[in-house]
Length: 539
Length: 79
Image 1 (spheres, chains in turn red, orange):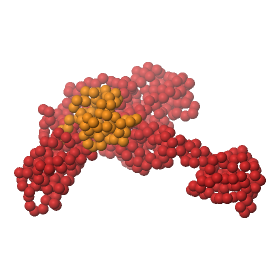
Image 2 (tube, rainbow over the protein chains, first blue to last red):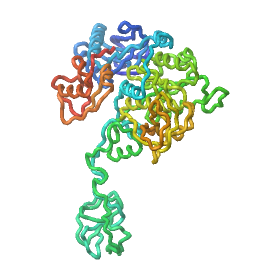
Image 3 (cartoon, rainbow over the protein chains, first blue to last red):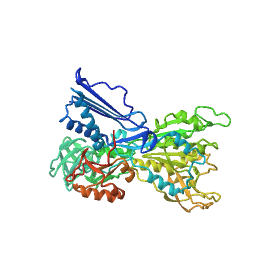
Image 4 (cartoon, helix red, strand yellow):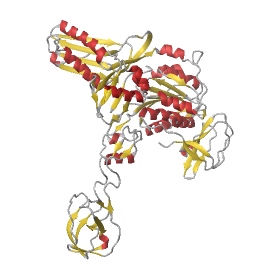
C-alpha cells in the first residue's frame, strides 16, 4: 500500500493528483474538511491548528495500517494543514484508493473518526472576524481603559505572558546569537594529555646527566608514549603530547646539539609543560543553559565536539512603521518630514537577539493601513512578535491599538509609568506577542531594552536580564519628574556617566549609550558617587 | 529528557517544552509528580492528558528514560 502523509503550513491545492499505483481501475474516494465560519458559537474568520508533527505523521500511518487490515486499501494520501487557516480553506484532505467504492468509503469514515481521537493535532482557537474586532477596538467608547503599569509590573507581566519556544538542534554555523538550551559539559580532559609548551627536548625531571642521547622526535600531532632512561631525551614540538609522566622540557635555545647528542647550556626550574586537564576536566560544566551563543562560546562548543547544540529557534518578527512624515534613509526629507531611523534600529536590535525581521511601512490612516496589509493573518499569523512603530503625530495613539486588535491581539496594557516610552502597548495572542512602540528613536531604544528584550528573552529561553548595581561617575542633572526614568548613560571603569538628552526625539546620545540608569520617580538630580540601578544595553 | 507541551498546556506551563534532568528511569506516576512540581497548573489537566514517549502513546507500564522525547497530549481536535 502506498501511503503519503503531509503536514503543511500552506494552502492545500484545489486538485490533488492520484497516486500512480492506483492505475486505471478501482475507486479514489476524496474527502476535504473545510474550516467553518463558526466555532463554539462565535463567528470566526480563521481557525488556528497546531500539531505535534512527528507523532501526528506516525499516528496517521499506524491508523491506516491498522484499518487496512479490515478494509481493502490500495493507496492513501492524507494532507493536514496547520497554522492559521482562513474560513472556507481546506484543513484536511484524505484520498483513499480501493478496488470497490464501499470499502474505500467505509475506511475513510473510520479513519476520520479515529483521527479525531488519536492524532495529536489541535484546533487551537478561532480568530474572531476582523469587522467585529475593529468595532471593538476603534479607539472610541468600546475600548476598555487599561491601568497604567509600573516599570517592574510591565516587565513581569511581559515575561509571564510570553511562551518559551521549543528548542531546535542546529549546526554551529547557524548557532550564533541563539540561546543555548542545554548545559554543555567537557567530554574529556583538555589538554587530553601533558603537552609541551616549547620546542625543545623532553627528559626525566631529575636527570642530572651532562650529555643526553636524542632517541626520538615527536611532532605536534604525534602520539608516541614511551619510557625514558637516564641520559635519554626526545626532541619535541610545541603543543605535542609528552611521551610519559615525570618529564620536563628543556627549550631548544638552552641546548647545544651535536648529531644525536645534546648538552644543556642553561638550567631553569620551569617544566614547560601544560598539564592534562589544566583547561577543563571531563564532566566539568562549561556553558550553562540560557546563555546567548557568541563567537568565543561557539569555539568552546566546537572544541568539545558539541557540533549540533540544542538552541532556541530563530524568532520571526514583523515590524510595521507608520507615519506619513517618514521618508527612507536615502531620501531627502521635505520640511516637516524626517528620515526613518526606527526600522534599522529595530532590525539591528532584533538581529542581535537572533530574530529574522520583516519590515513594511504602513500608510498613516487606519483604513488604508488595513487595505495595505490585506488579510490580517497573512503576514503576521506566523510571526512570533509583531512591532508597530508609531509616527510622531498626535493621532497615532489611536491607530496602533486598533491595528494590533485587528491583527488579532488582546491588548494587555497600553501605558507604562516610565520616560521615555510611556505610551507603550503590549498585546498577546496565543503564543504571539505584539508591541506598539512610541515613535521617537530614543523611546524605541529604551522600550526595546526594558520591555521587548524581556519578551524575546522569555521566548528564546534566555535568562532574564535584571538591573545591576552601579555608581554614578558624574552627576545626573534632572528636574524632579513624577515618572520613573530610564536615563541613557555610558558605563566605563569609573562608573556610570549620564548622557545629555532633552527629549525623546534626541538621538545623538545613542552613539555613546551602553546602559540605562534607573531614576526613581520624584528624584531630581543625583550626586556623583551615588549608588544607582542600571540596565546594560550590551547583548 | 525533553518534555513537550501542546495546545492549552502551553498556556498552563508558559512554555512549549522543558528539559528534565533524570538520574534514572521514571514511571508514569513519578513523571507526573515531577511535572506537577515544576508546573502546578498541570495537575488540573492530568485526568484528560495522555503521555507519549518517542512519538508513541505511553501506557501505565511505560518507563521514561533521560534520552526520551516525551509529550503531554491533551484531547485532540484535528480534522
